Length: 248
Ligand code: HPA
Image (cartoon, rainbow, N blue to C red):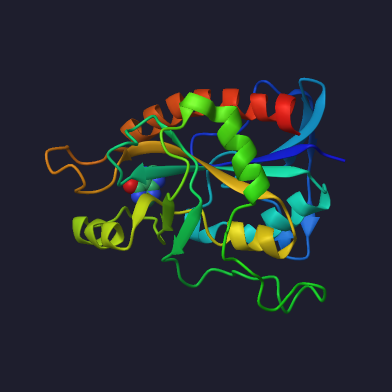
């Protein structure tokens, strides 16, 4: 039994608070994992960590084998899965380096293998996805985060194909669509997790203002994104630790 799995994104390739780490190479019906699953203990609790893009960040967002990753996570039968996603912000309340916990998704990706249906006999054909994140886990993470979260309701994560960043016009359209966050890795991971019955939420690390959102901002650089993401990850680790101790 695993209490918690953390799926790490850009800038997050392990968790130094996890002890007694065992590296487990995993093969799945969808191919091998890009990097080993790290299993260990955090505050005495069994946890696991998976680097979504591989440990060397060698896999681009549209090339991630989301089905293999989610399948491998599901084999651990975790009580909770916290996915960490680097994003840009389209919400004045959510500046770079802040944490965000979306409760809705808009999927702008294309051509990604986005269902287990057809490959897993017991998977449902039309899974309910009205509320894409697990309600109980979302509430527990929001409680664990407390003041670390400026917004925890009505926050929409728009998932783009990448790997390029968006145009200013695309971001304007996404604002009209109601998006507060933009990133490249939120889907199809969330729906695959739902298909396999996992309690899954996305904890977003804000790396930058979305393209053109602040017209006076200079262009977005990867260095800036990584610096802000790593600052946000410090808060995320505290939140996840409180979640483990208090709610799981
Ligand atoms: N857009 C898409 N993905 C991202 C961004 C962004 O601005 N920042 C970090 N990941």
